Picture 1 (cartoon, rainbow, N blue to C red):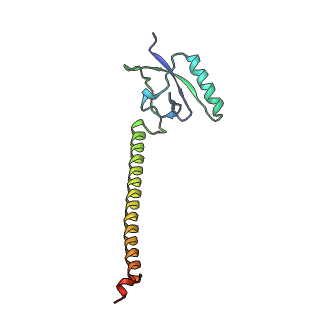
Picture 2 (picture 1 turned 90 degrees about the horizontal axis):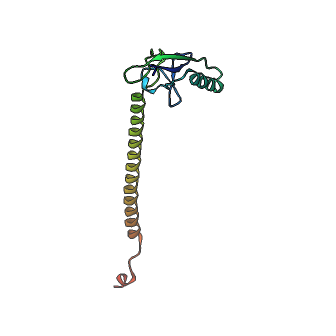
Picture 3 (picture 1 turned 30 degrees about the vertical axis):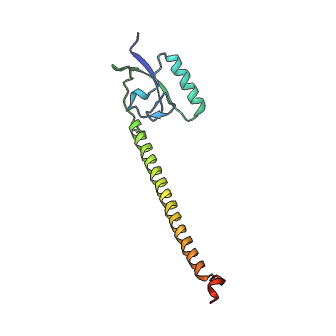
Length: 137
């Protein structure tokens, strides 16, 4: 068995992943690893058909102990999985905070409207005429 895989690199030095995106190569486990050169060339042709500005190449790479390709990272950095996870967590936290603020606003609006309703009821009762039985006297 050969200790070589093929990867696809674009003109920016970024590598194609199994998830269908370009990454800088700092996380080689994410890269699309293809065992046969002709399959890698076919994949590159398909990518080039979708993106006419793509200037890609197929690279033969040795693999490390974990069977990940050994590549030099691109100078055009992309977010790592950790960066993406942190961004997603921050978005989720912001969304929860916004929901909490909205719930508190609804609750305080409910309290204010209840209090104003009680005030209106009290004002209405002051304006009402006393019962006739109380007026006879």
